[in-house]
Amino acid sequence: MPDPSLFHGIAVVIDDEIEDAGAGILELKTQIEAAGCHVVSMTKLPEAAGIANLREVSFFILDWNLYGRSLRGAEGEPPIAATPALVRQNAASAIDFLKKIQKVCVAPVFIFTNEDVAEIEELLKPHPELHSGDDPSHILVKRKTDVRDAGIFEVLATWMKDAPSVYVLKRWERAYSSAKNELFQDFYAKSVQWPLVLWKTYKADGISPSAELGSLIARNLLSRMTPFDFELAPFDGLLQTLEADETRNRAAVLRVLEGERFLPKNRLHGDALAPGDVFKKGSDYYVNIRPDCDCIARDGEVQADIKAYLLRGSKESSGQVRKRIREKYGDMYEADTESVVFGLTGGVTVSFHFAELLVEASGPWIEHRIGRLLSPYLTRLQQRYSSYLQRPGLSRIPKAAWPPAPVVAAPAPAAVPVAAKKVAKKAGSAPAKKKTTSRKSPKSKGPAQ
Image (cartoon, rainbow, N blue to C red; front, side, top):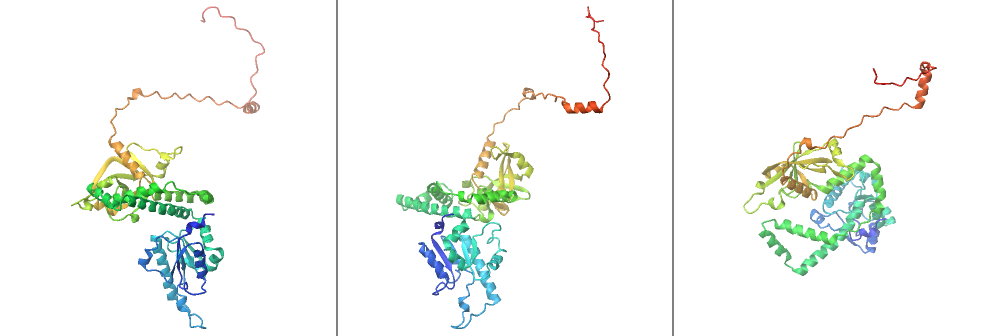
């Protein structure tokens, strides 16, 4: 079973009874603290500004009905029944919170209820970002007593058995946190002013200092994070189950490949042009191959006027893709005049052609942008185009010099099986009588007449 300690850290518990002595949620709070973790207690959903501060949380516990305490009657009197309007408002607020927290923190959320678990799951289904279809959702709807009896960290570890992406995320977060501290401690020891030194250098080069500083930090983080230590063998059963369904497996693989090489436009920031930007007009695709330092508006320039260097691409049919694939090596045949990106987006494979480079102001193109091709696929495309531009012209090879075509021997007549010969003898007419006498032909003397 995956290590439950991967979830140790800060837990946020949102329950209107968290401050009440004897409340059931307090037992879960005690379990979390007993593992050396810290609990942030809230009696109501945080405001939008507060949600932005919950980026480093390990997991959340949310009581679905946050109005129970407000409906309590006076001592000795029964509680007041919740109105349908209050129930709807409570559900809408909870769903809105789940959507907002997902944008700032990838962490599991326990929803506790004393009602039917299936009712809450049905309320989540109309929201695809909260419901993952066949895949395990990061939202776990549970009864408090079930989690309390099993132990919250054991429930988390059991859930993670079906979610290898969560395991990888938690392992990566540990490596990232360690590398981040090492990076900034190392540079701080060099000089407290290190960002200013680099900033001035980048500005003197006339490039975007923000982009370059970010790239430097990313490179140094990666160098301190590798090698990674993942152990995915316990998840082999999940992979075998997925591969058993060919259609579902292919769809999942195409989605993963797209995530590896393509960033959709809703993940891009601003309207600035960048290398790898992919545009779609009609049935044609276009990719910008201009270097990043040339995609930046400098002093006195307008970003919309920056020229894009665009290569046109066309969608490949399934038959075309199949003919290109070299099964032995797992790659694709390409002509020198093109670069093919398999599974660019939506399972579409695109061939970008080198024969013509379209140079136009980027402003009118931004509205047609669908995303960005990432490296190393972008780098490979740029390198292939560079080789195409520098290709030498060679003379044709005269046809007369070609090696002769191999002579294909005529196929030998098929032999008649013995059994078939016997059948033919029985079914056919009687054979002609053999001559009983024979005379040897006299030896020829001289030339034949």
